[in-house]
Amino acid sequence: MALFDGKFYDFYTHPAPGDRESVALMAAVAKKYGYSGIAVTNLTENDLYMADKSGNFSIFPAFEIPNKRAKLRDEIKKRKEDASILIVKGTDEYLTREAAETEGLDILLQPQKFNNVLAKIASDNSVTLGFNIGSIIHMRGEVRVRELVLMKANLKHARKYDMRMILTGDPHSHYDIRSPREMAALSGLIDMTEKEAFDAMSTTPLGILKRKSPDYVQEGIEII
Image (tube, rainbow, N blue to C red; front, side, top):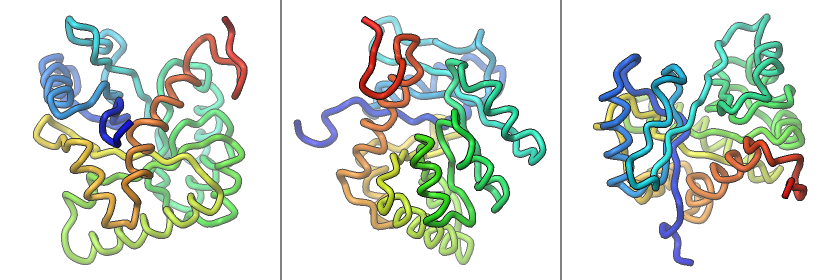
């Protein structure tokens, strides 16, 4: 199968809170651009699962764990059996370490102070490393350069320990959505290969959805 003929997902989207039309519009544009689904991080369960009538686009719940140091591990452990995709932004060294060391987390997004030791721990705990391509789009000047350097370093650590990787455009409206091909092109700025970008938008998200399935037991075992 040629690249970009598969199913693509963005698991970190932010439609306007409490606005069903915003969700529906973002879903419609994402579908038009070639996505099979998105995960919404800031709406209630009643606002989710607004898949289109044909049934070939899905909206999944995601929960971003609040960056509260004292409660991070407890929140992950409390919610790890939920259907929601669990995400932590590694905004400092402490949060990055806590997230990497806690089993049950799905995505560690754009971590600061990431290194080989934490990459090995995160890989052993089946934590996926997230890359926020939206930051490349919206940042400018020296801040953007620092973000690129950070992502390039994180990519090297992920490769060394064969970590699963995922890409997001971090869209806050339908205007922020970029097609899978555009996302792959932008990921080239951090030295990600086209195959890695494909896996980060297709293979890895599908793997997370599989692990969230009620029939999933562990890798290689499934209830029939």
